[in-house]
Structures are given as C-alpha cells and as structure tokens.
Length: 146
Image 1 (cartoon, rainbow, N blue to C red):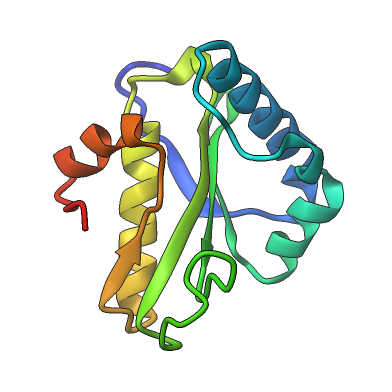
Image 2: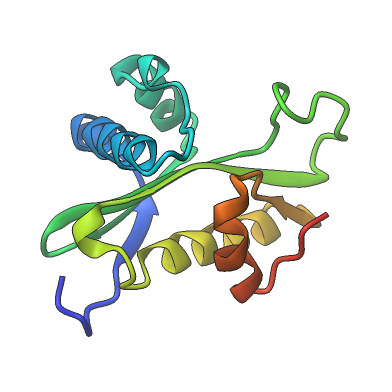
C-alpha cells in the first residue's frame, strides 16, 4: 500500500473468506507473541467468517496489496452484552490489520466505516470492547472508555 493510498473499506464477500481467516490468524499469532491474549483462534475458520459474510457483518479494508485489514460489525452482542436493548449500539470486534500495513490508517479507516454504519443503522453507540492496549487508538479517534 502506497503511503498515500487510503484503504478502501467494504462489506466482505465470499471470495474474501480465506484471506480474512489468514489475516485474523496472523494477527492473533502476532498478539500472542507480544504477550497479549487474543481471541480463540480455533473458532476463527471458514464457517466463522461465512457466518459474518452472510449477515453482511464482516468489513474488509483493501488496497492494491489485497486485503490489509478486517473487523466484524454486529447489531447485537449476546455474549458480552446480553441485556443491551436491540438497536442501542453496534458492536465492533475482531479488528485485525496486516502487520506490513500497521500504522498506515487501516484501523482508523475500518473504525470510521463502522462508526458511519452504526449511525446509518440508527445506533446511538458503537461499542469497541478491547484489550487495554487498544484504548489509546480508540481514544485518539474520539471514543471514551466507559
């Protein structure tokens, strides 16, 4: 990705699944190597990604180098927010960026796309539950820790 080339963020399609699964596995391995617990890699497979693709809840950031980032954006999160009112918030999870593209605005582009989608869906909040190490990024983008 040229340093001037902004990533294109779009809803993932079935043709993106293998690349997204590899990206998530690579991101999880990198986080684990840094001593930061990541999501359960055993659950990140084709079926996992297909579920989000079928619901149009998987976003990818791409550029001339292919897919360089991804995340999920869901209308509900029964695992972590079982008592939340439907439509109150959208939930961003599994944010991953190809290491060769870290620091180039990929995370910001994905988060901004999620923020826009949440507003479009009428959600008052975008929840980004995360490891404490990511709070700085989110706070720089205008989010507050609650």
